[in-house]
Image 1 (cartoon, helix red, strand yellow):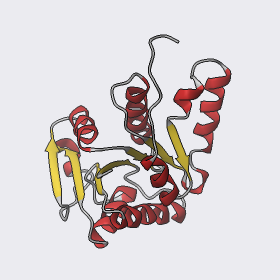
Image 2 (spheres, helix red, strand yellow):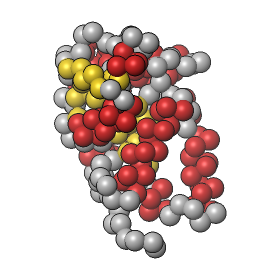
Image 3 (tube, rainbow, N blue to C red):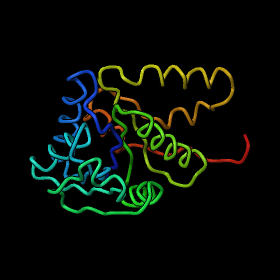
Length: 188
């Protein structure tokens, strides 16, 4: 695993625990010589994880749409920065560059990015691991929703297990190393 896409908020959130988690993830990526691929911003959790990877001597690739370049204050110190025209191009480029996907706390955009790559894995468009870094129990309600989807027969357990969930970055990345995508069959 050489590159991981990280989806997360462009704000720091309500708890200091989110920033601490971003810093821990950044240190773990740099320690393992894994390049960070992310949205290219210098602010919020996005900036915290990028600054940490860079500060620890790691590589960071940003992908930012031109419309957000000024609004989100694109990071000027990255190893590489791709400027794209649309959000769709941003997501496609990040998927192309990454060997897996880590989702930290964030808002609707973060969830949208997660659900897109998770769904693509479900239908067999990629076999890359998707993980939720459940910092400060942020994703507990989503985990409950997954369980509800299974109970109501809208999600198969084998697909639910594709969402690797851990509270600590090191544990999440260890599980990524052993990830095997489930077999995909049409309309089970």
